[in-house]
Length: 588
Image (cartoon, rainbow, N blue to C red):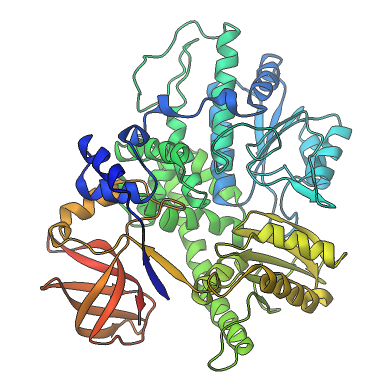
């Protein structure tokens, strides 16, 4: 591993400090491309306008007409946290805006696969629906949308994924309206917005459309409230949806650009103030977290995995119902169920990760580097957990990684379902497209993003896929790209090694593309020991002062002096908070 220090533009640091930003935060923000305090304004008024999102206006008209004529709406969701929160936002928001006849359907990962398929369209029609609305899926569902239209359904696609490619050309489904910042011709600046964010923007546009139609006679107070009300013909506030928007945005690991950070900050503000759905509150309790000091880490590592577990091992309806209920007792029951499923997921993942690591080790000759890309299949793997395992192997080996499991769908046992995770410099979806062109028929289905993608292949084609992926990686990746680099914020001044600074940092919005602060410098290792047989507990001397450190999941001992990369944390014992370092890596 190579530890690197981010560049910090001095002029930006000075400008932020002049505006009253905490000196440490000024340095951290400047290193992440923030140049002025205006960029840190997380007010709702600073959100990008819905009018700039292509299709939002047309979607608003379609939905307003459907509400006016009491047509039946059916939301088709996805089985991950983004899809679950997007579904909950759609249902809650549309009801606030007057929809009376609305339901939802979420595909089963094993039986249905991803997205709006023709059979899903038929199931929607069988519910008596008039309008089908996708959330967090649909942009690649050409056949599914075509079937829905043939059945007489109006179709609104809301999505954020990249469109499908056919012979290298973008192919869009023939929906009535498509709202997706990544569709051709969309000028919306936040291309990284999550599926739940897209649906939230559609609701903002719908409210504006209903306003122009004179539906609302009373405007809400022009002050950001912490709850939404819709009494009589008062225009409803939609800010009660922001905790769900924030959760889905962070859990989907999309880039936290300025607009996404504002959405997340607004959601956190409401959660900390106690204005959160019952299900979200119960998930905090089930995870042993405190909602009054909620952080983005809670979303990404506590709440998000519990919701995702339902889609991986059971039925995402459990996760969606948890986010929809307003009954605290029902919310607690569902959250406990989700917690139990997540524990099962962790056990399955641990076994799979061990087997996957053994398979990966078998590919690597002693004292040699791993191949440029990794593909692993085991008939005992569970298809609901392959993405997590791929992420773990990718992190360990710093290689684009696909992990496959045999399909559990009836009649498709010969197919393998794979999930991939990538490293910077290797666009996974584009790599799959190149494999498909070079080896027609090998990829039955594929899609995704630069850093995460999925595909389905016949079991007999696994070796061909593995060799083809490695060939693309060999062509695209050089030695520098294949060297793991950990970007840090450099040395931590001793004056900031305080518990109150830890609290200050935890309150900020960090995540993908806006990394949490990680510091690095050479320290003295005073003592070290294993705890729980798999974590390294350290006593370090940092700038002359002793400080505790912990390196989770690491068992190899360190030299007496070593350059470490670490995050700041606080450990509380008998009411006293003590700073400790969470080790992220070492340059040895």
